[in-house]
Image (cartoon, helix red, strand yellow):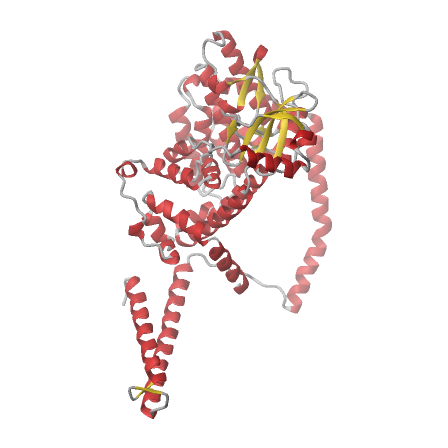
Length: 563
């Protein structure tokens, strides 16, 4: 425990300036109350009045907009965190998630000499030995990397994604600060403990670690190529392995039109309907058939090629759903489409985990009310991704925890639906999903699948039966020698523990103060040299230290509002 505290103190001191910058930005945008509740100003000696900029523009912003501005001002790690939070609609109200979804991962371009240095350092050779040319002006610049068009020595046109110098160190520092703040939130804000902020920051850290390793992104792209090898409507760029490292990614240049820049003059109405159908079809195949999907299919990452071929780009953020997860999600959507609240409640309980399972009657009643509110209107009026997100938000009120992969999948579905509706406002996503839902449901009923499930169940049951006697014997032996223990974990005692620690610290401080006063008095009474103006110096210093300690103790008591 002591070493962990010392390690945490060392890290806090190491990143003190960056921590001050983070707190300063939060205070600038009006989060003094949160800072007080987390004891950040007192811990960092930050005077609140000096950091809040009384700007009319900030004062007129809504709370969600101020939170988005905080993420943008604090840089890449907080931008990524905001993007992740925008998918977790069980954590934040809808206005916040909608505002955070606007976060753009853009940054000022890095000068080309720095890019050249990274390329030559990573590729272990001069640039001219790998590329015939590299355009010095980037195609785009983001917080983690920027992209340049180039040509290989064999004449292939490529794009080169180069990581920003020092970005790994910045992300590591920010994640440590965010984890410390998350721990303070768990400690001081009881309502957020159920959401496990520290675990959420750890999840963000794992996602960012994958984004910072471009060899993982290349592997994601190659898996996509494999799973869509027989798909005629998709085109995926070629990866050039000889020019790939953790910080450099080289792949084929694709000359297409971004879906976000597609205007009515470029495609006729039937062609727009066809493109919308293809995009939705490809995303649903990723989710329902393969369980490995693009986690950020916004219109800027989808390019339209000649003959209405669809090309996905940027494979840094991916999602994964195992077979069981896909099947349970299908049961959820199937129950919604049939307006069956019992089936929907069962699926939600299978999807989630909880410390204590909530009463089924209350959950089913809330689900029934949700269905009656939304699902008796024309299907083309429904926003599928938003409705599913609202339904999963309902689970938070019942103490259920949904795995993070489902929120990533919901974000992908929501982005896909927005892109499709921009091409064809009347597109019915639920109707297009029906064949995929039926296919997943029928897969469970195939004789071979039933036999496989029966075999797995029998094997697990046999393993458990074989291990049970040994486990019972081990428990009995521990009881005999007194090694068995019951561990009780108390909830809600933190405030009492903190109060007791504060009381004991003040008592110890007072005892030391009294001892110093008495000791100084004895020294002066004994007239122990050396002297100054006829007064023993040691006793005088003791009195001065006692006075400082007394003022400090009194100030500490007054600061907490109790004498």
